[in-house]
Length: 396
Ligand code: AMP
Image (cartoon, rainbow, N blue to C red):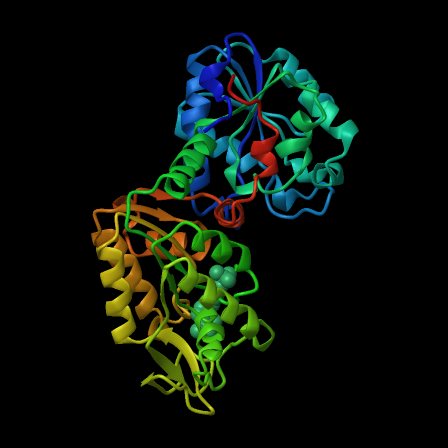
């Protein structure tokens, strides 16, 4: 990575404002998944150990720019305190008097967590005055929120972009995300296989285009595959298929051929007579009959995709192979997850649904890397520069 990290700057005695991703799922005031908090801990511990004054900030949910008790970060402060075994001082506002007083009083090795950034509409608007107010809380700005690195918000980009802080560096989490994913894209062990799934081709055009420049094999599953199969003249019945993207799919198929990329599409499909967990279903090869819709890849496709994964040295996966939320149509997604878990390759899961599936199936420990950002990892795979990374200082 060509950006400075917290290891490249002196932090002892300095106020370090760390943008973390504490956008955790909550149910009845209780945090239901600690992954994001866990992800931020190495950076926090390092700064504490180095004697920095650690000021944490994050968003949670979509409070629409105003205070809303439902989205307070107070439970996160309590949980973090328990996880670190160290006091976490909670500021009840973001740039108001409580935050100012607590930041001013923060000692070396102490931690303050500011209230939810999105209680200010200025955060998402990347408002200059708001950036300046946040910058007043730091000598060093640290971005460790990969999940929001694709957004140009005040705390993720503006604070450094407007030049309010001299030292703007990456935390360990962002550093690892960029190293692992960047390494795979720029210098992969080959064969390099990418698997894309999910609902729409239109959401992933940029990713497909960029990956076709890099991979040896591109696997396409999920509803996306029907648009490609339609481009090959295969009937798609009632399946989700983007008719207006069929031409584009033809171009992408041609690009794959020109680049000598092995493009794998489903050869068989689990079809259902309605979009329902208890629908009647059957496996078809080739054309999908009228009145039926494809909801998962079939057994032959599972084997072809799994074999491709097992012969790869680098695998990147983003997007489910079918409607995995319904048990009956989760078989393809599970087969791909298992192949990745069994493989000896560098395995990278690009956040979102595939990350959830891998964790739910108990394969998380078998993967090289599970990205903490669905949208951010997609933009990264698309070859775009993320604003939350672009704003950080380059290595000399
Ligand atoms: P995305 O957000 O684009 O990654 O899409 C994820 C969604 O795609 C999941 O909610 C899946 O249920 C859905 N999906 C995957 N395969 C199919 C399919 N064959 N038909 C309808 N939806 C699908």
